[in-house]
Length: 337
Image 1 (tube, rainbow, N blue to C red):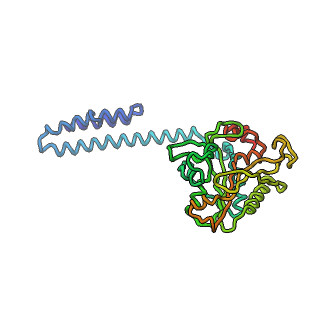
Image 2 (image 1 turned 180 degrees about the vertical axis):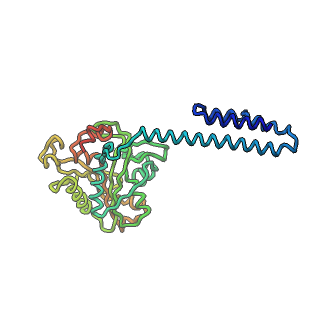
Image 3 (image 1 turned 90 degrees about the vertical axis):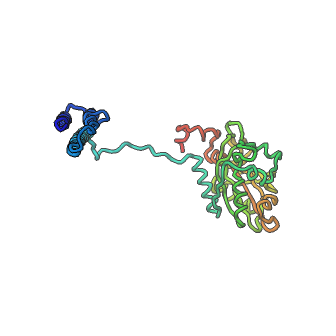
């Protein structure tokens, strides 16, 4: 057996040193499960007890020698491969790199942040809430009970009977009023959903920004002054606003708010359809039911709320006549901003 082990060692080392030999095949041939050395080791049981220790030691020496030779051969191969790669893949670090196209803010993001800056400058803070909302927060807490006609204009997408995609960011106002005592001064921007058909002025997904102020002695004049300041900073110092009576279930009294056309200054043009005014948002004094429903005493506190579509502001701001352009990801359109 000793001669056989020595013969295996010599054959293996000779094959490993051959540059043309496949090292992996050599390893399998001698050290694999059916390899020559493995076969010899299985026959160790046939040796006498006196011969086993010496043969076992020699077998281990042979295995170690073969494994070391294979490891050295593989290390040399890696070194040669690396040297060849370094020689072939020369890199001139003085050459200019590949230019990277820099992106920019989406026009809706830009307008939203401009709007946020205006209100933050007036002391508002930003509040956020879930887009998947409970029916209670989206409707019931806002004085819109089940089967109320106002739900028709805010029909949205339902996950279940009690869970839906919010149709407005007003639920954020309710959640804030439940957790925070007045004074409250927040805006709540975010995505909202309504089952509207997609056309030039409607989208089933759009962005909205609502505002809420609750404190002692808040009046309609505070609402008018806030919105007038916003309009002047967003559309220019010459901008005027007007209130038209309206009805919202969650505000009383309520109003639609128009701004003077920034394109013609109120004279009448194609943008404002000859009226000189552009409807921009809805607003009003927070309904006492909404305050009491959130644990705020309407005999002590009052407040105002307003809401506007960010897409609508952006369309007026940039003179865009189709809301679908914001969501088609056409670089020809987005590149203009």
